[in-house]
Length: 331
Image (cartoon, rainbow, N blue to C red):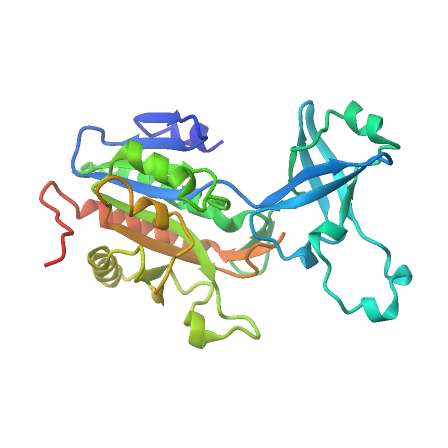
């Protein structure tokens, strides 16, 4: 779907062997710019199917097992999608002293309604099949939306929207800009698809769009995470993989364009695609722009639509100011 939308306005749209999708506007320009948002989501994978037809699973990416209990899932089988439900022993059957203990993923199972292992096989399912939570998008009050996989499908949306804005300019940008919907960020401890796609694009500068913790909910420690709220605009990262010269340019442009923003410290790893991209080839000056997100890694993450478009506006404005002589080398 991302590539189909990109083909309506981008000059070159493709996919690589790892599943990274690319869309380029203004090919032949300079410098080369990469905009990255990861398209993958957290999920589960079948590790065992028992004789009674129950599926046991492990986590793909980081889950709080408490939010998995009782959820419906969609299993990606050979013959198509198969629905299932995540099961756990009923509260009535759990000993009182055990009820306050947190559930663990290994204690859960998935019920697809099959009577036995053969019934599961007849549905086209086998060990290794992935599954996702069966939860669609809903609109909340104001401009808020809730959905699974907001981390980071909204980032993939934002980078595509940014190059759509650039493609619509009367005067095209000087830069060649490639939006990338990267794969395997949630499991990419060595950089995932972001590292390989950055090697392919070989950008002079990169902007990563991901989500970060919105701290406008109860019991969040702002002393550790800073103050970021839905509707407060994009969050600009400083430190770690975030190049300081890119940060300063983003902050200056946000102020000039009247785009609200906040700043987040990243003294260690950012835990985003920026960690892989900034180390590609000879090093890539990389900026990290995040969207405030409530209830991260849950079936109902929440973001502001206004924040998405403000983030796209900021990135498009950043690209418009780039030229062949732009240099992010520290002075």
